[in-house]
Amino acid sequence: MSGVNALWQAILVLVGGGAVGFLYKGLDRKLAARLQGRIGPPLRQPVLDVVKLLSKENIVPGTAVPWLFRAAPFLALVAATTALLYLPVGSLRPVLSGYGDLVLLLYLLAVPALAMALGGFASGSPYAVVGAQREIVMMMSYEFPLAIAAVGIAWRLATLGLSPAFSLATIAANPLWGLVGPLGWIGLLFLFVALLAVTPAELSKIPFDIPEAETEIAGGLLVEYSGANLALFYLADVIKTVVIAALVVALFIPYGIAAPLGVDGVGGQVLDLAFFLVKLFGVIFVAVTVVRVAFARLKVDQVARFYLLPTTLLALAGLFLLVLDKVVMGA
Amino acid sequence: MKRTELLERLKLSGLKRALWVYHLNTGGCNGCDIEILAALTPRYDVERFGIKLVGSPRHADVLLVTGTVTRPMYERVKRIYAQTPDPKVVIAIGGCASTSGVFYESYNVLGPVDNVIPVDVYVPGCPPRPEAIIDGVVKAVAKLERLMEGKEG
Image 1 (cartoon, rainbow over the protein chains, first blue to last red):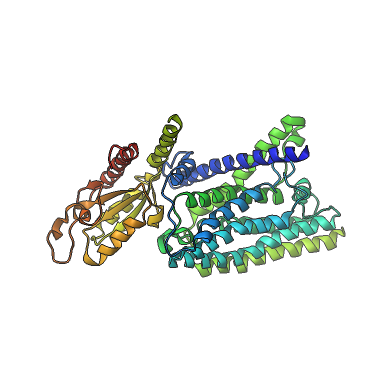
Image 2 (image 1 turned 90 degrees about the vertical axis):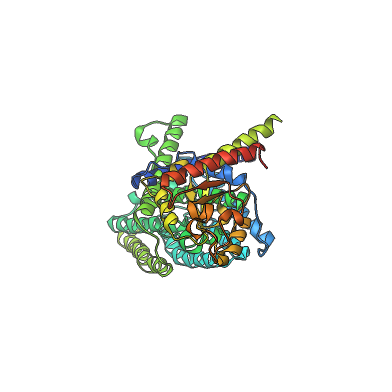
């Protein structure tokens, strides 16, 4: 019975996640246009883009490795949608909680990027190979601060005696901000900023869109993709935006408004869900939309240096402060 | 019958409102290219119609071709046309791309773009204004519509 229940929940989360992803992609483009003093495309533009791509011819270039070239978009989409099932939605527990935790989620987040790199290498185009190499360089730079932020939180929860500390349900149910002392609070703030800095790179958005970079390597990883395959990558990007924003929300701002307002039952859950969507939007607006309008694309070495030096140091400082906090607080 | 009709309508709505253009210079003087860039600026903001500049012909629905075709570009123009997935539309931007312009019967050019690949819409001018380029893209949408309805081969 619970299996059937979980299946229904999974379908609901996947369809809802996709719809929210399209809505936020549309909002992102509209707001970016408004920030640039333009009118911008209609909100349904991402849907129209995907519909159009699905109706186009799907070309597999002669120089490509056909099976890998075709498999990569599916791999990216499947990994992104699976990650959606491990995230707490509002006050609801993750659909697959108990079958995987934060560590698995971090790996799932890396898979779409790896799939894109694989697809790029399989395209047989020099532009795509350059893009794939850049993607790998960027991943190696940002994965370390990302891992520090995740592990720092889970470790502090474990020292407070909450287990399983790596489970996202535990993390979302126990906001750390209220559980640590002032030192830990500053440390958490550092980790939060580091994670927000990693967000645009996870999504390959300006200023960290070096793997795609239309103006220098003609679309990079995606240069040979067309039609349905490109639509699948587009979908994977749309869903990954929701996933990474939901991860930031679950790790750092897992608060609900139903409990403080004194609403419980179904009404409370709906209220929490609505507040969760607002938080998602806030994260996407601050970490993706504003950043991509405000900055121009960085060079490859600048991206690597940005993540390997300031961001990693910031994350390490945050972790160090959390450790100090544990020593001072003694719990 | 009804279902396929609905599907066609859906496809068409996508194509009409989400044209991605690829910009191809076949040997022009950059005048038309600057005007295309002007059409992409916030002042004209073609993104509100879903028109987006893409970096690869594989992603494109529309080829914006500027300049008369020079000998070295001949093979490349043909290859880029072949690389663009169907359904596609070619727009010749400017006098050179439409008629060879001042390079008419010059020794080092192979004539206007329609000597090499089929052209659907001509936008004359030296260079055409951004409004004319946007108008050309809108005419291309009408052409695509007819193509999808099967009235033209």
